[in-house]
Image (cartoon, rainbow, N blue to C red; front, side, top):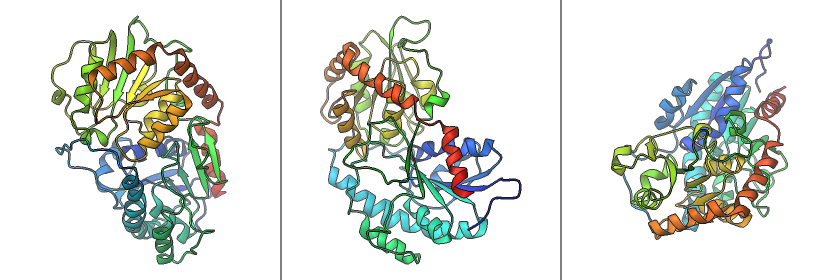
Amino acid sequence: MTRAGDDGAMRVLATFAGGTGHFLPTLPYARELRARGHDVRYACQPAMLGVVQDAGFPAVDSGGATLLPPDERRPLVPVDRSHEQRVVADFFVARVGAERAARLAVLIDRWRPDLLLRDEMDVGAGVAAEAAGVPSADVVVIAAGGFVPAGMARGPLDQLRARHGLPTGPESTRLHGDLTLQPAPPGLRNPADPLPGTAVPVRPPILDDAVLGGEATTRAGSPRLSVYLTLGTIFAQESGDLFARVLDGLRELDADVLVTVGRELDPAELGPQPAHVRIERFVPLAEALPGRDLVVCHAGSGTVVATLALGLPSLLLPMGADQPWTADRCAALGVSRVLDPLTCTPDDVAGAVLHLLSDGVAREAARSLARQAARLPTTAEATDLLERLVR
C-alpha cells in the first residue's frame, strides 16, 4: 500500500463504470479532496473522458461500458426486471468488471494511488484496488436498493477475484469497498436490502450546492407553479415518444416547465413549444430543482435523491436499470405517483401532476425526508472519513 506524502497530500484515483449517473455521485467528494490539496485523477470509459475533463479533472481511458452513439434513438420497450438484474452480473461484473480490473491494475501499479474512490457499480476497480492493497471507498448509486439479488453476482465476482489472486466465497465476495458513502435521505433504501456495516449515511451533496428558499415552493418572482421534467442522460435516447406524450400533458397546465433532454438530444427534436416550456440539453440539478413544485422523471437514483433532498414530490416513469425498484420505494413512502411509460397518455400525465400538486400528504412526506437528509453528515465530513481511511 502507498502512503500519503510528507505534506499530507494523497493521490486519489476516482473511477466509475457507467455514464453521467455513475460519475456525478463521485464528483462532490473528488472536488472536496482536490480543494484540500490532494491529487485527484479519474479513470473511466472513453465516451466519458470529455465530460470528466469539462468538470476540471484529468482523466484516462480505463475501458468499460460504452454509451449509445449520439445519433441513435431507440423505442421504448416493456420493463423486464429479471433482464435488468442479469445485466449487473453479466455486464457490470463479468464483462465490464473483468476489463476494468485488468486495466486499472496496470494504472494502479504505475501511479500508485493512496486511495481509490469509485461508484458502487465499478466492481472491477474495487477488485484491482484490493489486489494492490490500496484502500477503496465506494459511493452508492443504486439508492433504493433491492435491485441486485444477494447471490446473483456471486459467481462472476468470485471468478473475477480468483483471477486477481483474491479469496473467494461468501465471506470475501463483496460489491462494496472498505468504506461506503450513502448519500440519500434516510428511509429511501429498501430495508430488505441493507448495505454492509462499513456504510455511512451522508447528506445528499445537492444540499451543499442548492440555494434553498425555506418552505417556499414557487420560484422567486413568479406566482406560477413550476415543474421540472427529465428522462436522464442515458435513457433519454431510449425513450421513444415518451418526451412528446409527457410534454403534451404538461404544456396545457398553468405552470412553467423546464425540460432537460440530455447531451445527445437536440431540443429542436421536440418541436416548437409555448413560452412557458423551456427545453435545454443539460442543467445541473442544483440549478434545475430549487424552487420547483414537482419533478417528472425516469426514477433515476440521482434525480430521485436530489428531488427528495429538496422535499419535492414526483411523478415517476421508470424505464429500466434500477428505476422500477426506486419507483416502488418512492410509492411506498408516499412521495410519488408512478405511471407506465409505455402506455401513459398525455391526460394520464396531466391528471397525475395535478393530483400531486394538490396532494398535501405527498408534499409533506417529501419534506419530512428532506428534513432528515439535512441532518446527515456533510460532504466535508464524508471527506474526513476518506482521509481517515488512508491515514
